[in-house]
Image (cartoon, rainbow, N blue to C red; front, top):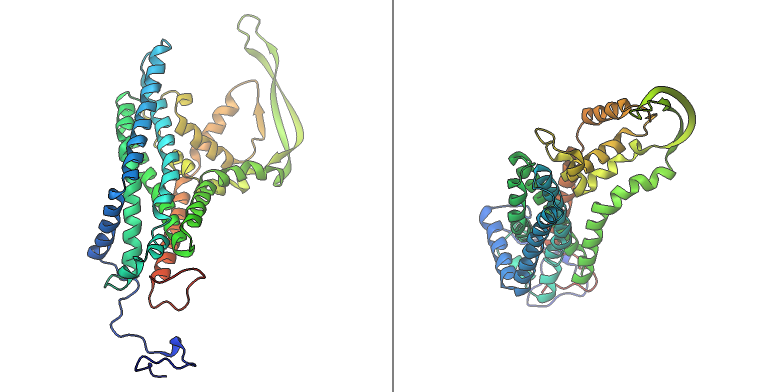
Length: 374
């Protein structure tokens, strides 16, 4: 069927039968100039919003104040500033930065597409020579830069913790990089939802829900599922049969075996790879010189994730610490968890970005109910 002429559209005409325009912009074309143009436009609009500047200043003040309170509490309680103080401060600061970043990052991208569509500015970009991929990636890059500003605001506190000792330069760089990657993931999720959901408020709420599920719900499913995934195993208990009256240490150990129902966390440990907390903690390089393990919050969180991967401990040694040492060696021998997490994040980012690109293609065959072109 030929295209209608004279401004008259036949009643039985179907847009699917019209010839496609020649020279159309390829959907997946990517160029540095195109991506940079979109990103710069988005960043300029973000910087003009005073609410963002106020939020960034409040965020920086909050993290810096928290850092000061930890140091002040250590001094006030009669303690001395040691490497363990720096380790505690570094771990707490990283968890705070990651937590607040997961709250802010989805909101920066969750209205990137449907918000422009509501304001009537999206069609302006779509009618230029910019490809859908350049528009989507540019918006994603701009939103990610906004979240990186939060990391930059927390850098002074991280540097202070690094200066106090207990944290190597390699560990500092690796953790900052992984925090940035985690924020990029939730930003991409927000972008994808902004392309699918018509109402900006709904896309913001759904972005927060997804971020909460990744960070909290997925790890909680591991212990919660223990009631459903159980087996009956023989558990060996090593107990003390006598104690030295002078030292109080066990002088004799006896073994006792019991048939018990144990949770099989080794079947559901893979749910942990979705949590940014687990990925960051597991990828944190171990400290040279091994500071106090109890002071290293990130190392403790990484040990918990690897302990779940080992599954039930079938030897409970309550007499000596040999079982604990053997268990620690087993945890250390396991392959790391964080590569699985990064692979999952790569798939998630690629899927969300591809969805946004698909929604930005023109001409549009069919619009969702309530959505408009301009």
